[in-house]
Image (cartoon, rainbow, N blue to C red; front, side):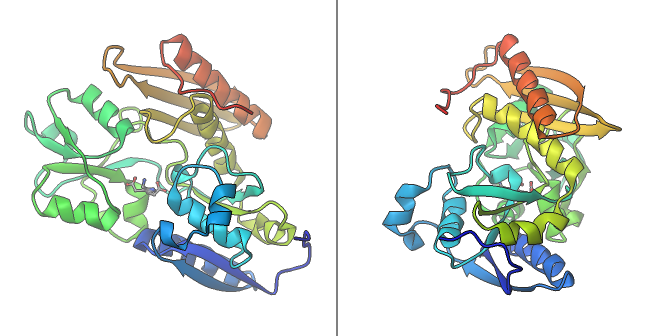
Length: 314
Ligand SMILES: NCc1[nH]cc(CCC(=O)O)c1CC(=O)O
């Protein structure tokens, strides 16, 4: 397909149909409309069945949901996809790029419970729901007495399971609850110093085909550079650790002037090394310095005993 560089007549956003995904797509739709673009949504039902074999074999990466949207981009049925950056694999499949990263919502994790106001108030041996290995490792370091039980599903499903009484508390990203106007469910926000967020948590990234310069140009004004640089450093930690959702890994950065202060944590799945935490700071002004800082954090994690997953060949 030819590379296009004119202003697009109308822009189509591919989106999953969960409430959070729809909110995120509509958010980008509203911003683009306010900038004078005509924007439509292409809602896509669940994974698998809509993926054509041809395209499936071409696209790599992890999340099936992300893949499905990429197929729509590849086939030209849509122009962009909005993702929670936390769910986007560290390496996009060939032919796709992040056109921009937008302003970050609250990056913290939220403590959600119908009986207890905070983690500290949970009784000994209370049951906390999360399927995130990162949250599990960090919670266990804070409160070794807690019973962590798996909790899957979208945000609404997880809240329903809490309300049914299966857990004393659950941990969710504050950003998701705030976007869905369910901040009233948040009993406490964790201090990132205790519950270090996942790389990219709370930030939205917009994925496009690398050859769609017209869309990349249209999205340029939506970029928030401090967020983009911060999540670039966070994602570099993850990439260097071979991170995926099957590794308990946290990476979080915040700017103070030009200096990006970073924290990272890695949890030992076998439990022997416990939780390894490192810090580093550097002046970050571009993607190269952001990546270098993330790589330094990953090197420090490994020097302290963290074990990266099988290296990627590139
Ligand atoms: N893994 C699911 C997911 N992906 C993004 C968010 C929340 C929004 C965000 O972090 O941007 C959530 C829910 C959660 O972790 O509680």
